[in-house]
Image 1 (cartoon, one colour):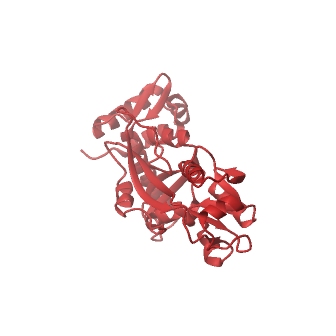
Image 2 (cartoon, one colour; image 1 turned 60 degrees about the horizontal axis):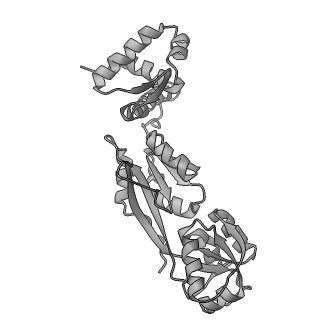
Image 3 (cartoon, rainbow, N blue to C red; image 1 turned 90 degrees about the vertical axis):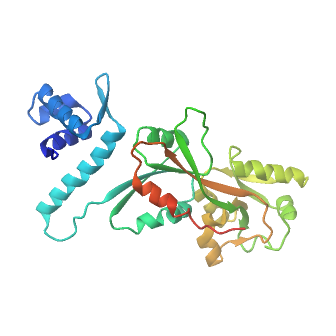
Length: 296
């Protein structure tokens, strides 16, 4: 039996409105008639499309997938009306969440295979770990990028993929320090811009300083890599960062990197949700093997 596109359009309208009563009024239908149309679509597809919680409608996983296809179908129809040029190929959507403090250079490097494709629309949203993981659970995100593993237990449906790992470096302006200076002397003699204390990189740095029997002078604690990059460029102090964060400055010579590494590494993760209908683009992206970010 072919798909009834009238049923699909009714579902599409309700999914975007998020309210059955409002959609019925807008379409000049009775609420019961609209419910019947959606029920018939669910029976045709063999899956529930909405999770009905009181008066609110929430898309199920099958509903989110159906909405993605409906968006593409009806967008193509509008493009056909607007133009006869061959610019209306349906584009697949990849919804990515990224920790607000995560390096933009890393994000671009990881997503580059999808950004280069004309048939894929990459949607990137930033947020806190709580916001991003909630986005995964509500199927508003397909994948989340973080530099820390989320807390998991036997009931947590997350899948954690380690996608990159890089040695952290000490960087600063050329006039501030000699790159040949040993790490111990750098920590003892210079002010530092460091990640906040909840960072695994900061924890490792503090442990290293303790082993070296030195007390670092901390002039700034920053949880945003873009801000750390700016503070290093403004010569506020030496910064403890993964080189990918400041790769443009290192290439131009605006910042230089200490030759001796502090033996600290930063790991990057892609977090996905165990899903019955995973977005195939996620698997393609993970199959690329992560992002090459160098380091020692």
